[in-house]
Image (cartoon, rainbow, N blue to C red; front, side):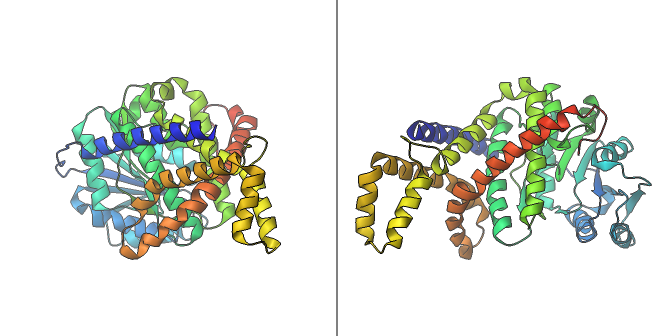
Length: 398
């Protein structure tokens, strides 16, 4: 089982890497500067919304910008921070009298937008000229592209943000590989839309748990193409396990909701779904799954017990091999294979020479963080199945 899964994973990852390489090498002319509408929905983002709004005017000429900031009845100082920036830059402020939620707030603002190309930017995300230009280049290259988004790179520091940086790097590769046909997901934090495409699918769905991924599936179903840029944008990510758990439960619930709601879409483009299934299977096999009635966890406990008895390391390995034999070798080889393949996600997060120590993070990511993510995904499936699947169309799901 380990050998079969390892081989399949290597094949899928090689295929995805080639698809991503081809998309990145594809020739696209630089789009001429054009006017765009940028919409920033804000709910209790006082600590970050100011920097987000300023980043927009740093990334693009002010005379080509129609910037709209939406305060969705924030309970903190978000509105005051927005007004401070509006004293320096031309910003239209929408102050909702009642909390409408992200989907409805964006739908209303997009309906009144002045330009054909619209960028939705989360209030904790920093826009760059490079990211904006790449999204515009992709839009200009193909009139059938209905939406383009940019992947995230954490602003925060620490172990948990570092794990999420590798996760986002993985998603950048898997989703970017889909550009060859059409990507299955969008990153809602930095999402560029073509108005005609957005209107053709009736905008964001209020009942969608992850409105960005739902929009990607709807666009695919309607015949529009979806692409993902390979340019990262900086954003704030969860720094506590509690907020991380809430975010991942929502993300995985939304993913399952779209998978079951639009089966025809991912069946026509199965590569990303296949990768997630195989990578998850491999990670769980390396940590939990039995091999001839033994598991790596049990093998690890046995070895630890021998070490605690002060038995020399060479004898410990001899005893482990005697007791577990082939199981130990196959498990170790599978674990090494998984970690070597996972290096492809870690390397893009390294930008400076002193960052090369991050390679050591591949071990806790592939054998700790990602298996935990899979367990949370199971909770997300249960959460959607028991509660949110009954959310009537038109009602807010989250």
